[in-house]
Image (cartoon, rainbow, N blue to C red; front, side):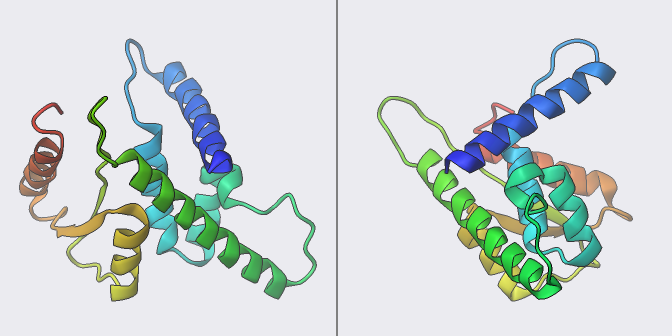
Length: 163
């Protein structure tokens, strides 16, 4: 889990530097949630999209520092690495959501996709398994306000009204 934690920290620092350049005032965001969303998206991506997510995701999603000659070896290694990343997220999120008497902490993630996009059952099961998350369909194009309200309502229920 340390390589995942280190990657999240590095991502948080890099993102903070970029946001700070363009925004004034206070900045509040969750690097873990952003990286989880990226990794959940990566879980279902292929080809060019997967390659672009690896660029953003940093070292924990990439193997480009290795010199690999065959495309087959690269593909197999990438699939193995991706599986490892998803299992690391599974362990981290499970650990963070364990109840304790000392404090209350819960992590809740959900992806929202346009209702016109169909998700494979395998993808939905893996999002639940690795990220303790779900995918919901909304109509971003024709019902943007209703979609916003649905998302905000879900966030409010998950955070017990604190966000």
